[in-house]
Length: 199
Image 1 (cartoon, helix red, strand yellow):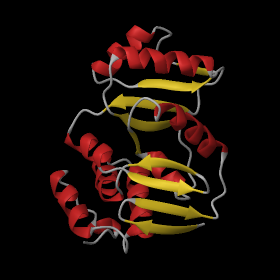
Image 2: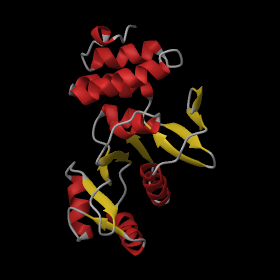
Image 3: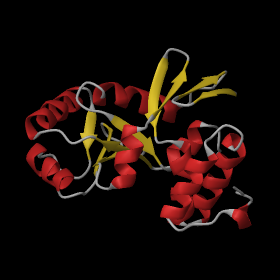
Image 4: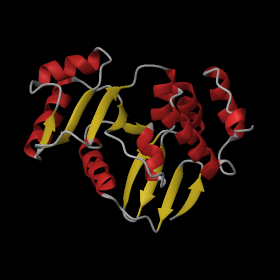
């Protein structure tokens, strides 16, 4: 697998498309018909080759109205997806409005699932407004900028999150905007030096 990195896009060459990748690529085709989105957290590192499991794909979406959501809900149900939190579209939309996540999986499955949330703070908004297009063959998805992913993983602080941050740093340290990375590290009050993330 090779990466061709530009400021607002990454092209992955010779990537083996896994079942998890297919699940994500299939799902975002539906999302794109209704709203902007960006994928954050663990799946970002898996996408770039880190060998670890994940149960959910954390996905941030721009706010849209209830009628649009009901259209999306019906389309997903018709397309053999299942909402894990509730079978009621109004209840699900209320959860999104309250800042909660809703989970969506293939019919008759629970894992993997999409964890869908409306953007809620400045970091979410930055992730969405500055999303990176990742292309694989003729398909693509959008992810949060690496300069924010690394500090946010350090901020979350679990062993798995720190390993994710180190993995992304090792791949992208010569390609990303280090001043932007430092800005987010300062905002989140994290320091990666002891993990080899030196800026």
